[in-house]
Length: 137
Image 1: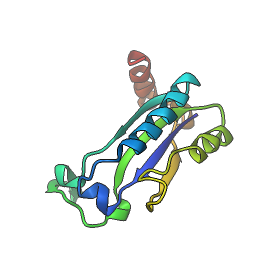
Image 2: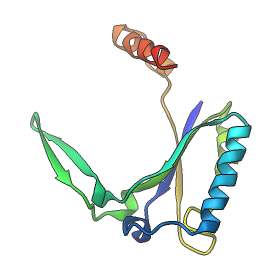
Image 3: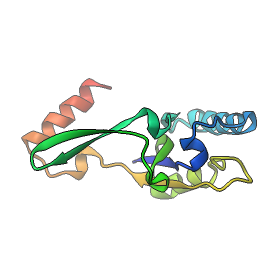
Image 4: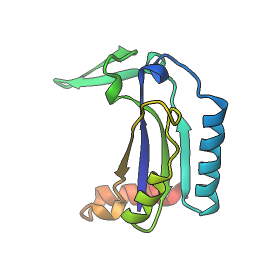
């Protein structure tokens, strides 16, 4: 089972403020633990939305909208992707996640389970994705 631990953005992260060295150390130690346990798949922080864009789909057309985006509470500042045996194990790892903006700052993480290829009904479309997954292992 794969889970994404999503760090929600704040006004500070959207302003491009870099984390304090103590937070970088705490995140490093946490991710080392994940790696030693064999559950870490990927992790990184994201640049502010001012350095990104969105592609909107409407009426069969696409339009590109440059950042920044106003709704900070809906934005993502970073993520950690883990593969574990159960939802309970994912929850235990999430509970140990360092406060994402420091112990005395407001912050929030959200944990979401990823779909696995076996969650979908079998068919040629799904088999195409299964082959892609196998080719990238």
